[in-house]
Length: 264
Image (cartoon, rainbow, N blue to C red):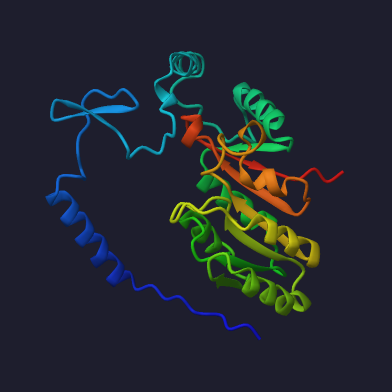
């Protein structure tokens, strides 16, 4: 039997560490700064224009003329918010966006307000009470948060990209569960490493009960055909793979989207 390590986190010790990091960073004048003029690649601090390496916008396209003009037009036509449940009334721009994303990814698409909300909406629907979940220790915090909604489903934490451990756990859990869900990142934000896609493909071939849910927010727009990300580039043909992506990062706007397999 594979040895599964228990990872324990003390909230009190964690907050002490966060407090120390913020206190030291503030003393060094690298946190809690107020921006003046913002140009995307550069930001004004204390009257000086400096290159900005702290942004989650990969190419600063939020300053692109066409994007700003389109955003202003949409706000003028629909207001600063469209405050309806989409199941009741949806903005026509969603249909256009999803149609274009489907062309980009070759998968059915559902747009969400954010990638985090995509996880929170999708996982409790996809994962049934008779399933089991494995989650990589360095998967994005939003994925770990979403597992808290799976109250009657066993959730096991696994070492980062340890295919041998995952393989063993799938074999152990399969006789007692309908499906085994593996929750991972396509490109990990902590270390900048890709998921071991070749080995994951092997797991899918060996274990018919395995389903993989991949947060590929950090690879969208710059990896794969049409920038569809690493997960779809390597595992896009598999019917037991669901991918969540971001409309932030290189897209330079807000929101997320879910990519589902074509089952026919």
